[in-house]
Length: 533
Image: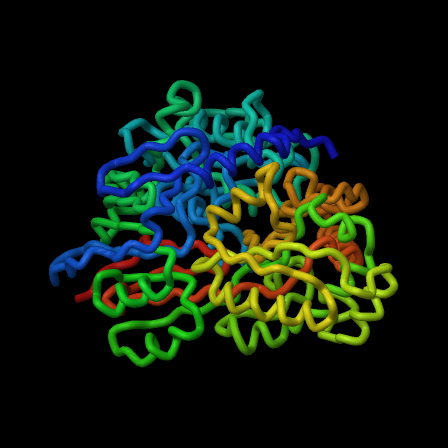
C-alpha cells in the first residue's frame, strides 16, 4: 500500500507534548495559541459563571470533559474535543447522522462512482464561508489533497487516508482520484472538514486561531478553556435557532453537574454513573446515553515495559487478571459494554474475539510463571486521567487491585489529561500503561489506524500493518469483511494492548434545549437544535 507517512512519530510527539505543556489563564478575552494547541491547567476546575440566562435568551452553554489541547490548524490533530467543535463551524462533503446508514448530502449534493479509484461529486452552489468568500471546487481540491497527503505539506490526517488527488471538472463538479482503491472513502470524507483554498494557501498562521468555515456557527472567542460561537446568519441551511453557543472545559464532573442543576449550564457530557439518578429525578433535565464507537484500553507505551514487548504470556496474563465485566456493570455503567474486539461493537464487520478472556486468577498466575516471572515481574506505572472518562480513578484502582491479586506490581498514578499526554509523548515519561480511549466513525480502518505505524502505540508488527492497510484498500464487501475479521483475530491474538470496554457516552441537558443530535461517534451537533422556554 502506497500511503504517505507524512508525519513521523517524532513530529507527532513534539506537537502533542507542546499542546499538553502550554498553559494560560482564561480571563474571558480572545486568546491565541501557537503550535498545535493550548491548554489551561489553572482553570480546569474553575467554578462556572453564576449568571442565569434570561427567559428570552437563545444562548447555550455546554460543559465538556476534555480540554481543548489542539488549535484550529486543519488536519493536524487527533483531539476528540477539537473534532466535536469543528462540526459546529465547518461542513463536510457528506454527512452520516447514522453511522450504520449510507452517507447523505452536505456540501456535495450527489455523487457517482467512475471506477474503483474515482468518484465524481456535484457541489452545492449556494454556500459561502464565514469571511464572505464563495465556496467552490477549488476549496474541495485544496482541502482533500492537503488532508490526504497529496501535497508537500505534512499532515497528521494523511495517515488515515490513501493519497487522493482532485480533478476540477467545472466550478461545482470534482473527481476524487485515489492512488489505490479506498474502501472507507465516505467515512473519511465525513471526518474531513472543507477549508477555504485561499486560507490554506495564504493564511496558514491565521487559521490556527481563527477558523473560517461554512458551518452553522462562527467562532467569536477563542479562549484556552472556552470557545464562544454565534449563529452564522448566512448558513446555507438557514440560520441556527441558537444564537450564542459556548463550549467550556470543566474537568471536575461534580462542578459540571452543579452548573447544570443550577441552570448555569445547558448541557454536560461524560456524565458519570453516580450522577445519573440525580439527573433522572429532575423534571427539567434529560439524559441521552449511547454506547460510543470508542475503545477504552490499557494502552502500553512501546519500550517502557520491555517484558510486555517481548513476552506474549505476560500480556495474556494481564488480560486474564482484569475483571472487565465488573468494571462495566459496577463502575462505568450507562451504555458501556465489555470490549469483545479491538474494534468497538458498532464498527462495521465487528467480530468477537476468541477466547473471551473472563477473569481467571489461577490461569493468569500460570501465564506469569510461563513468562518467567512467577513473582509478577517488574514494577510499572499505570496512569489514569481524572475527570475525563467516567469514574477513571475508581476504574484504575479496581484494575490495580485485580493485577496485584495475581502478582503484578502496578503503581497507580492519577493525573489530568494534559499531564498524561505530556508523559506519553515525552522522552522522560515514566508511565508504562495508560487508561485512555480512541473513538472513530464506525469504519474499521478509521479505528484500526490508531494501532498502525503512524501512532506511538505501534510495536513494529509488520503483519498488523499489512492487515490495517488491506482493510483500507479492499473494496469488495465480502473480501473486506474477511480482511477485517482477520485483523481483529490477529489483534486479539497478539494483545499489544488490553481492550477494556466500549465507552458510555451520556449527555445531560436542560429540557429547554430541544433537538440536540448526540451520535455514537461522540459528535454533539447543535444545529438545528432550538430553545423552548
